[in-house]
Image (cartoon, rainbow, N blue to C red; front, side):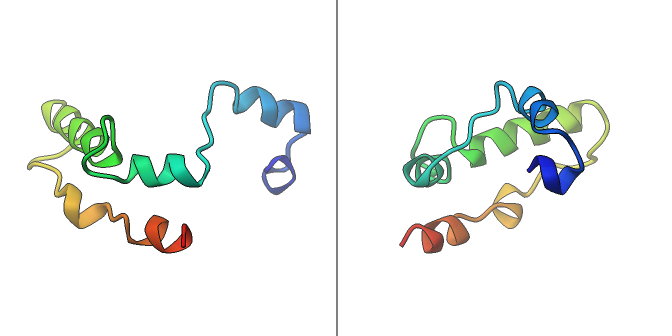
Length: 76
């Protein structure tokens, strides 16, 4: 990632500190609508926040923007 961004490895490591990279099961869980803290819940909360700040003028259509299709297919 550092090379692609034109950074030193140390700089990239510093920027990514605290970032969690999911493996196969973590991705499947994150895109599972029944799992706690899933991407659909996160996006809905973000949309509500942006709407309250006037950034969005209507509720975010989460299901039109987020799909588990690609994660599910890649996990096969």
